View 1: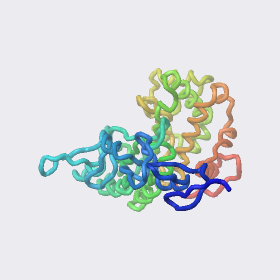
View 2: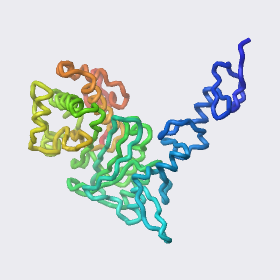
View 3: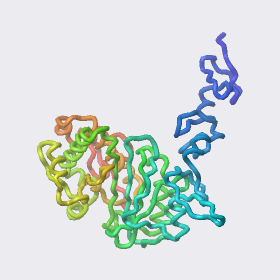
Amino acid sequence: MSETFLCSICSREHPINERITFDGEELCSGCLESQTTLCRECGQRIWITDNAGSDVHPLCQDCFDDHYTRCSRCGALLRQSSVCYEDGDEDEERPYCDSCYQARSGEMIHDYYYKPEPIFYGHGPRYFGVELELDGAGESNGNAAQILNVANRDGDYLYAKHDGSLDDGFELVSHPMSLNFHQKELPWNSVLKEAIYLGYQSHRAGTCGLHVHVSRAAFGVTEAEQDAVIARILYFFEKHWEELLKFSRRNQRQLERWAARYGYKEQPRDILDHAKKGYGAGRYTCVNLTNEDTIEFRIFRGTLKLNTLIATLQLVDRICDVALFLSDEEIKAMSWTTFVSGCTQPELVQYLKERRLYVNEPVETEVEL
């Protein structure tokens, strides 16, 4: 009979070769998984009951004490470098998240040039920052507060900014996050439902865009490595412009104004060189290269439909993949059919079918908002 041990948590017998010793306790793998977690800062394993952070960002006590605090108003976990302070009654500084700090002053919507210290969520180096424009229900601090209260219950994920291109609204901006964090942790579904409840539109407004920033560090360590990948991204946009135009839900006039193309050239590097020589549209290009730390995909029309938003992020992620892992010659030879046949995420496949851009049978299109 093989030797066994008794798990100190579930009190069941398990084969001795499955025994894991943690903090003086003998555990089975299931109990180790369910009762412990890893500190996101230092990687140390801790009991879940000793988690000083949050469910999505667990921390040991030492790392919390050294690098984090909590908002004194809503209790959200904050990295100390991103804290806002307001003097207390007895000259004590009280920490606030950005949303609560603005709520105390009554100003939830920042000016257009506001740029807070970024808070990175999820595993990098490929981080996505989303700018989602809302219109039609007011540039209202009260409405912004309601939406941000939904978004930021578990962290400082979104903030709001003024946007002069909108008639009667504002834009929501996310801190940089991994694709998985956008899909699993940020409550986009609740955020979009709250915006709809308050009367906002995005796709239907005709004034709104959905812009996606991707960290340049995701494309390589050196500038030369990054440029090679970015050149292939620009080439992909030029080669597959008609398909991407259909995916974007924009019309040609909107793209000429807000997300112009660079123009097709035979070699990826030639398009990048053209872009770097001061292409006249500036940041109002399909892929904006004017930011130091990110490139910005500006081609997409705004949406309040969850599947469309997630599918857009997944498309950008897929384009980054092919540009990163294929050579110039391979990406020049890639057809749209080959590209979409490698798209496997259900949200992206669904949307591609809705837009009649997938290799399989199309499906009925749900209404955009």
